Image (cartoon, rainbow, N blue to C red; front, side, top):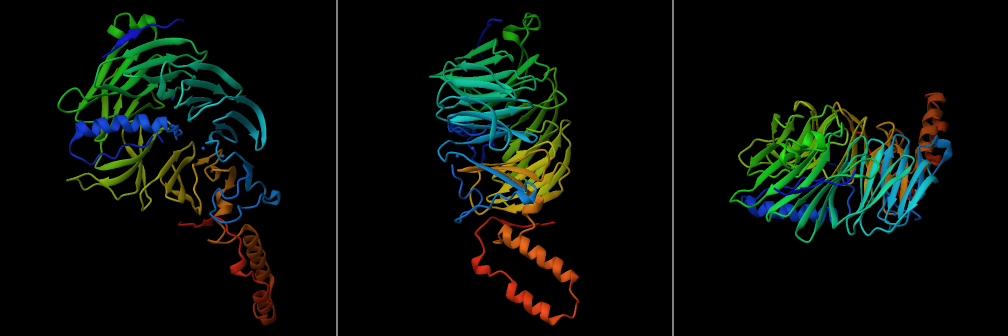
Length: 468
């Protein structure tokens, strides 16, 4: 499959919608799509980011005003509209990445530390307390923790995909002309293992490192035969464990006529592999433990919260009953479906966190617990690049073209669609006054009609709704 070199001493990725019969052609398209996806500089799952921010959530003239009296219901800071901003959240702190560098914030607007660089298309991966940032249009990859930069790499070729484990070990796939390289680095940036893949028609798509840092896994697509073959290969990292295995490879799982673009290690050490036909669980010994058949295309998938594989289903597969389009389901590390949620529409965004997930249907976003229960629903009137839960599911960081903000979605959704926060406060105040007034007071009712805000003058702000 490739040559090994020994060096000196980690979706919320969108799954390809595969709907045509010629899978060999589809496989080639998949490879190009994966390369283009990462070259475009997306926030790789986690995986999946810019001045005076006038309309993050709103398509109108004014954003929600920042108001201290609402007990930090919303905080915000401006970012450069051209900076391609993405964020990684650490409970109530966050790291902001732009094409000009990264900044770490313990408090909104007050950077604890920063690192300056110049990247054409920055992409970011987070795993636990570690973040990797790679220039998909260049050759630079940098790894950080909460205290600052750990190391800086200059890759041979452009990054195609990279992943982290919970100890900060990095797996990196790069492409230079027709040659792919897969490299594994420890937390100090030491190169531990390298593979050079030069076989024509064989493409590495995804990689990950086990959380015990003993094994790395690579998903390949082999198009050299009549039907494409999806192959997940496991390699030892340590030299002693590798010595009795050719090229350090100790196990492989092959699936004919399948494409496996997403793999990732779960909390219990099981390697999850998502193909266009099934989801697989692969044990630490490399044996297939379970499979979960897919009767729908998968529009979005994430394993960021490592207890669950979260899948958002698209259309039903031919000759299969399938689930309702827009259904999101949770699989545990044993391959059992633990919960599901019907969003009712095509899922265009999926972000998983400790307390739950955010499901996006175009500009409508819903916070859902890992038990499948809706916690909040929010409709934006402008485009967002990210909407990420922080220490609680309802405390959410939003990222738009010009601003990064923090919202309490429980308070935000108390507003009616098209209502400003000032209008919402007036309505709430009037409701309290009504409760204190005598029920038969016509004078008071008449006065309220006079004082009611003119809907035509309401500020243009994000609409919200509660579907519970």
